Image 1 (cartoon, rainbow, N blue to C red):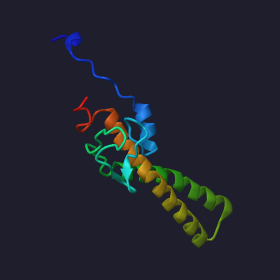
Image 2 (image 1 turned 90 degrees about the vertical axis):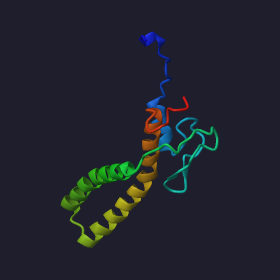
Image 3 (image 1 turned 120 degrees about the horizontal axis):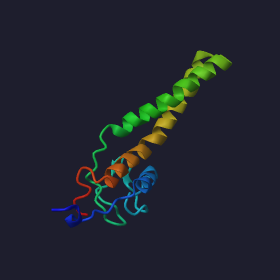
Length: 130
């Protein structure tokens, strides 16, 4: 069988899927909500009926969140401490609130992005119906 005889699979746009996933929207249509609640991925999109139950996000979004938050906050803590010398309790209080807020902001968006990239790359059963 030659390459020309193989059926051509449509490529799914990865960048568009990532943007939609970041907004916690369906990677297929971009208008249906991907998440039900804070982190629970819907079984299917309520708008286009695209199946989303094939995702295997597992701990990936949590690791990415820790990686990003750690790489942003650690240099900021060092810079604030060396330039302003605040009391330790002020430094700990302000950066604890900032770390938790940034983590809560990033976690569902990164989960959406991970599910969207799996959808775009047809991983874990996302490409079966195509």
